[in-house]
Length: 203
Image 1 (tube, rainbow, N blue to C red):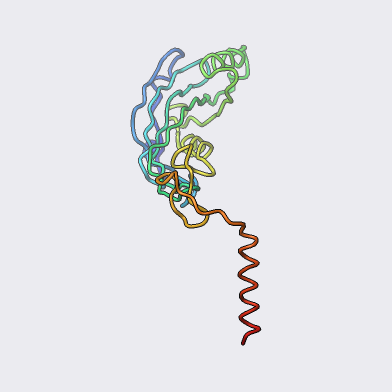
Image 2 (tube, helix red, strand yellow):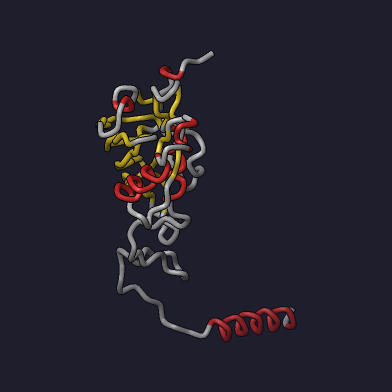
């Protein structure tokens, strides 16, 4: 049976979890979990994902506030150029202690108040597990959820990408003055059909 401490996503937090008010900084690379997007839009499994931030202990859990940066590879949906850049997401999540005491003595209300102060009342709270009685924080699911939710459905090489010419495929970013003599394509189609019918009649 695999040990928790052998997981590449397990961060030891026993010391900071011993009492409220302590902090543990994190500044390291972790392998990207499986299931982040697909071959077209996604983060390849095993790629290094940089996590920087800190675990702060409160009454009944740990708050992690930080930044996740992953290598993002895709293709612009307008001009089809490859996209290869760092994808960065800010994150604030909660790792609760697994203890019945959390439901009594008013601790839940205090924890909610502290979470609101740290994360902001308008920010949704994401919860992830502490393992081995609070000795390790498992960030695998946090990485997957954070990146999957933030990746664009239609990635662009830049927000104002002009795309390709619909008639000849020229990159309009590189040739912004590019244009064609405008003709009504409906009449062009009729002319082609007429020429075809005349050719068939002449046979």
